[in-house]
Length: 218
Image 1 (spheres, rainbow, N blue to C red):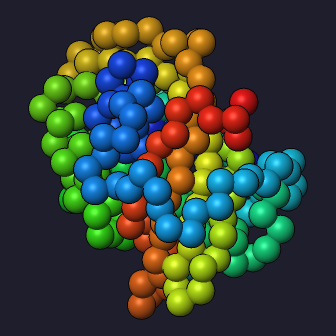
Image 2 (cartoon, helix red, strand yellow):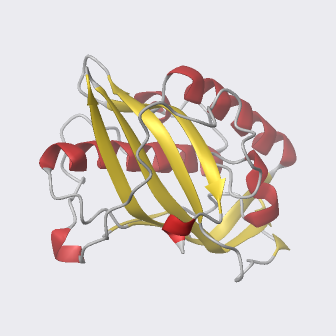
Image 3 (cartoon, rainbow, N blue to C red):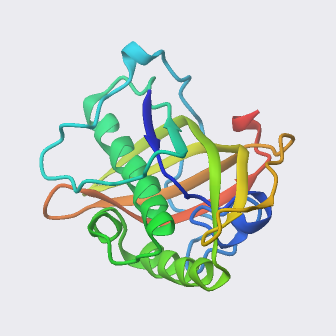
């Protein structure tokens, strides 16, 4: 299990329509496609911590500073293949890179363009602009689980995972006052997407799409 913390990170519940991999906003993430070619939405059962890959020492990956007050928990076990694990770890980097951009209110952090490209980058930058204008951020814990990866060949793959944001609350990024409490009844959302491997071997997210209240996340 990989844990990352951010002092003021992902926008919760009502504000999540502007977020990367929108929690409550349907398919409104710019160029992200509703039907991503090659996506297999079947999932692997997550394994225990001893089965989960570690990403701390992967050479060349940019540092991501998520602070101390917000936690991203990634449950990456169950893929049972080194190459699938590498893809999943770079998808995890995608999530953490956007969280860093939100907490810092800086969209030029190195990890953002390291893990994101193509239509997904354009949609993410637009989303970040909206968040910065609103002056919102979040506290609490987000859990990512049921990671699945399908290799397509020719340096491409599809992925899916579930995002549980039921412990995330919205705050004012300047005052850190709570704007909206966490919704403990919020249902996890399934996300599907496509990654492409660049010349440096990084699996960059190029498309993503949320599917709400999917059976895979129950």
